[in-house]
Length: 118
Image 1 (cartoon, rainbow, N blue to C red):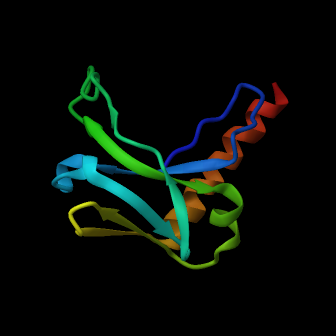
Image 2: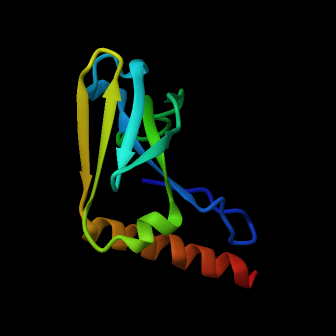
């Protein structure tokens, strides 16, 4: 997961859950994502031409994902399951466990607080 914070510490109040396309054949055909029993906005396919720049720890070259509203992510007290649907009829379920969500949100809030002080 990731989000973008502006220099003043604010964000667009959404988080992107992203998945490497290497693990999903035909991922360009993903047509829908559902999380917390609600439709989620797809974030499309992204490519990173410098995914291994100066590092042996490479990020995925190509990803797709869904946007999760901040309020929805914070309000749920359980793990989060997001199901992606493809035109072909195949499905992919991604589960993000609550301890990871809490650690992620803690890091986002910490960076946001530091940026607001500047």
